[in-house]
Image (tube, rainbow, N blue to C red; front, side, top):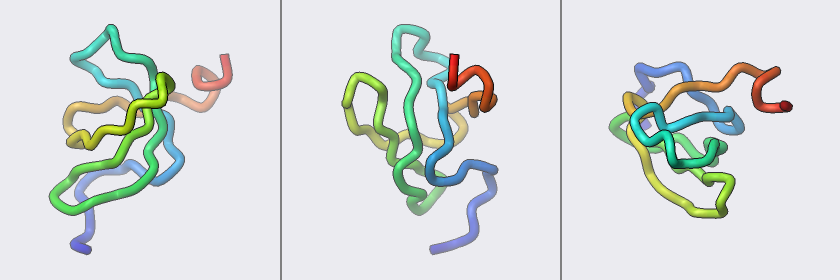
Amino acid sequence: MPKSAHNFAEGDRVRAARRPEFPDGTVLRLMDLGYLLIRWDSDVLETAHHSELTKLRDDSARA
């Protein structure tokens, strides 16, 4: 797999920046071309491009 140009890792908590109605999610797998497999907290699995995501800070994920 080519080295990714983003700073996401498996297990990171993320939010879809342009989809405020979506719950937060967790990165399950890094994929090719900058895509990530995300499990949203609603138990929906989806691939998303890293440019569409914002990493949550550790303390906000626990709140």
